[in-house]
Length: 461
Image (tube, rainbow, N blue to C red; front, side, top):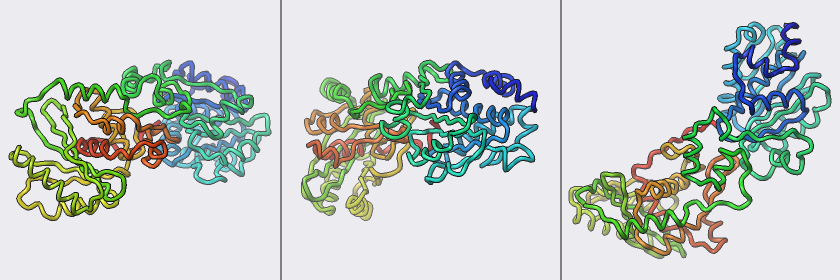
């Protein structure tokens, strides 16, 4: 082992190539050498550039080449720490015949055989302020993955422990927010860190299709492109979620094109429930055709209604559609949040002679990814609105002219939250900007949600 230590102690890149049989890219070489040469390293990165792989290489290199090292590793969630970083360490450890001779891996600990208490790396989630406290050693390496999402208190004991010659600290992450310790490392605290950025456009690991998908969906001036591709922090001002250009294109299609109802395959209603107050209850119709196109228009706007009254209005619209299209079952998507649950129950309890099915939707429900999009939405509101935008982008949504709808669709903003997910502006925040509640846009979104496909699992960033 001493021969290995001497050969690789000051050459982590050679270690990666010879011991791990890896082929580091230029950006990964930069990370490896930075930990060798600098006490503190901060790396902001786009998606898929190999930053977690690089951390695994750094941890294994430090474990092999420093005597009695202690390597505390943390991340914001158990998923990020155990399923991604710790699993990556395991993968590279067991690829190396050399390393498996010396080290044992468990779900929480990597340690030198026969020296488990004195020579180790350990996984601790950053959910408690003391996660990184109590570590003392001459050879000490602190590793923080997805640092944008880590509470600032976690970093205090790390800074206090960086006193010895062989103490090191590296934090990496997608630059998802413009406040906090990670952001400060690239701004006011920059002199303390060796800082650099990993741009996904420059990485051979990142497919051109991924980059182009972000550009197509959000544009090169958007925060998703800045954060997920360029590895840059979001802009100070939030972006508009649906551009006026896309909306006007949908309206133009509605006004200038036509569809043969022989190609009609489904009828979808969207019912957004407001009950009393200044907000509107809305009923929208979207007609779906064989080629995947939807033609949407407002059927009714109701003010200061009870759930019984709104149910009656909805059934009247269903009766009209049953008469016009007797062979088609009407899909009725209702926002079941709050008082909307009463409309769901009343519609579902007595169909009478009407041909329809009720589908309860929840704007505040679980988020996920929309179809094949490479971005995750923080909740179901984002998914429903993301579906509107995607259909407009693909020229598959034709919209009736409605000034209020245009204003609501084009004025809602979004941010990339600290987890890197798309988060739409809250209704109460829109009202603070004198923008009315997006009840018509919500009704439209509900009418397009019958077949909405999304994946609700965690994405690996």
